[in-house]
Length: 134
Image (cartoon, rainbow, N blue to C red; front, side):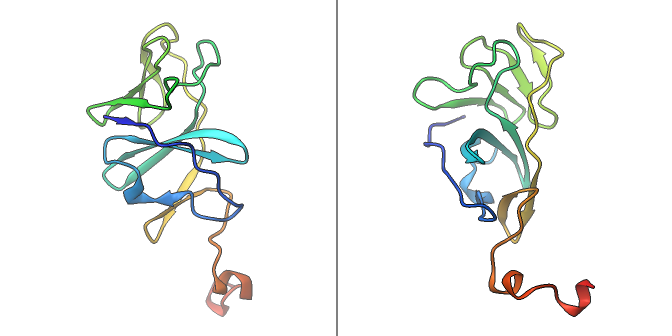
C-alpha cells in the first residue's frame, strides 16, 4: 500500500486529519511545525514519525511523495529499502538495522488525529476548563 498525497500543513491546535484519512495499513504525509511527518495507521491505532531515515537523514518517501507500506506492519525507505515497524519505528532490515525513526507523539480524539502537544480548537476550549476539569 502506498500514500502519495501531498503533505498537509495545519494551524497550531488544528486536527492533522481524520483517522479515516489515513488508509488502514497505510500512511499519510503531513507537516507539523514545518516538519514533514508520516502518519501510519493500523485499525484505530495511529503512529507518527518524522519523515527522515536514520541511515542518511533523507526522506523516507519517493520523489513523487509515495510512502511504501507492507501488510500494515512496516514502512519502507524508498531510497535504501530499510524496513521500519509501525509500532515503534525500529528498523528491522536494511542498512540502518537497529536504529529507529524519530517518533512524533500523537493523540486521537473524536476520530481526529492531533499532535500530542496541541489542544483541540473548539468553542469549549476557548471558553476555558469545565468545572469537572478542575
